[in-house]
Length: 391
Image (cartoon, rainbow, N blue to C red):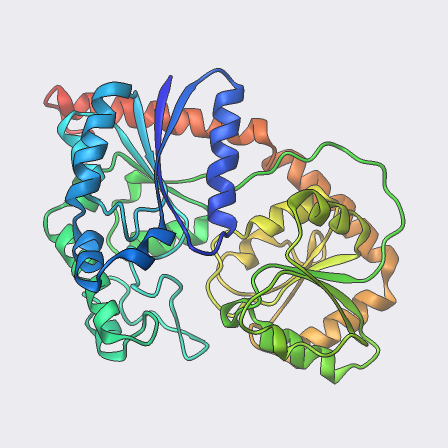
């Protein structure tokens, strides 16, 4: 199979970029011809605001380049990840004009919410779910800017209006059932949205000594860093390791409680996971499927997470980890204290987590699921091409 993957890389590398790289490698290792059509958001620094706004809604440059790429590659499937802001949904039209099936992975909620996380003032907000994002523009939800939010709203309303999202994508991939339900509530056709989670390739390893909780990720507000910081201050006996960096790093207590490692390569992060007792995910936003969670499960590491978004779906309370109320530092402190006092229970949860990984989140399982989705999209597009309605 020939597959053309579309991805607009972020200025600050994150889990989505890692997922795209992992899928590329997985497909190539299994003999598929895979190419990447990419843009890098570092190019934004040299663009005018007007050019960037126009590109966000419809990038003529990307449309032209992508059309040429389609002619040279002639893919069986186009797999879109992120198009914001330099690629734009224009590439979907280029593929549809040539009757090439389009599969689109929904890594965040950008197509429903300009801010992409359903978060406002550190609280969940669904004001724009299933509606025109007028409220988001009025509030300047994206980067506290009405102008920038307005550009995103224009992109969304333009492509909703002309049917880009409704008629020109054969299959959407939601990362969890929680995410799928949100997109259906936002107006997406239920039969076009399927579920395929993230994956990692971590072979079985020999268990060793484990010590302390671990946080891995961007140190930013939506990740619940302030909640974690308050929980640590409530119990001065708590100690933990933190891997990552971001604007909220100063909120964390000093070196007496926190071993701050900064950003580490994935191999080093996985080694840390294999030596920790639990991973902490205190997010206050709707999480879709943090890649760190599946990495933790692969490393036999139970997850302590807030009941936020899909985390309640992904963490089986008492079996693969523990859950607490989003935003509650007191509850998180209590759960961490319990975890510290019950290492044998955590070990059992860790074994369950590894079993869950082997059952659901291995590379091979993910590959088979992705191939089934591609084939489904090909069949659906073929039916439409031949004049029959697939949906």
